[in-house]
Structure formats: structure tokens, C-alpha cells
Image 1: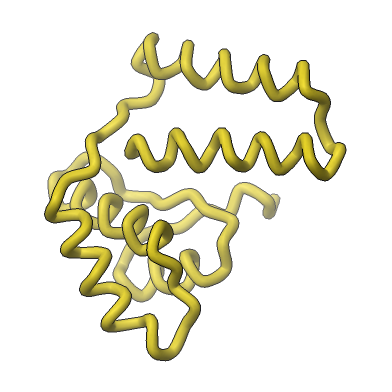
Image 2: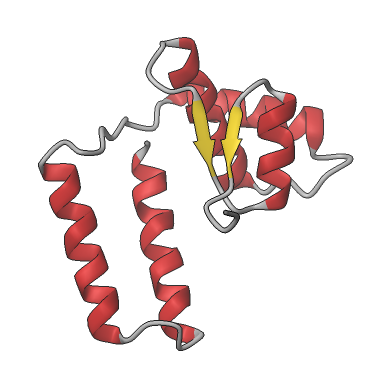
Length: 116
């Protein structure tokens, strides 16, 4: 995963608090667990590099005129594609419909964590 994924995961946890699906205490616990998993290297976190921005720009030019591919989603996908080329990932995990579609079009295996 990238550091952008770490940030977006915490944002998703915060959304759960705003929609009252989890409590503030649950939010704090989830953030602590995420950070502990990173420290324990259960998740390897990659830096976002200039080439990821370049790839995101290319993805927006390619898909943006037809689909609502947002900038941070394009950056997330650009990093994932780069990590795939380096042999470090083979699956994109996202619940975003556009990102699922574009990720598959770019040849990634995609898992939607909201589906069984």
C-alpha cells in the first residue's frame, strides 16, 4: 500500500464515525491498530513518487473524459500499477466503483471489501 492508502483508510474510518456506524473510541482503536500493523510490517507502505503523479496524470487523460476518475484515486491507481510492475502487488482493494472499473481496465485484480 502507499502512504496515500494509509491516509484514505483513516478517512474511511472517520466517515464511519460521521455516519454513526462506529464510535469515536472505535475510530481511535482502528487508527492505533493500523499504525501498529505498519510498524509490525504486516503492511508494507510505499512512498508516493513523482512517477506515480505522472502515471495518475496519464490515467486522468485516458479515462477522465469518460469517467469520474478523481485525482487522488488516479494517484492511488498510479502507485498500484507501478508497484505491480515492480512485482510487489497484484491486487487493488477498493470500494470505489470507478476505481474498480479503471483498475480492471488496467489489468489489476480488484477486490471490493464491501462485497462478500
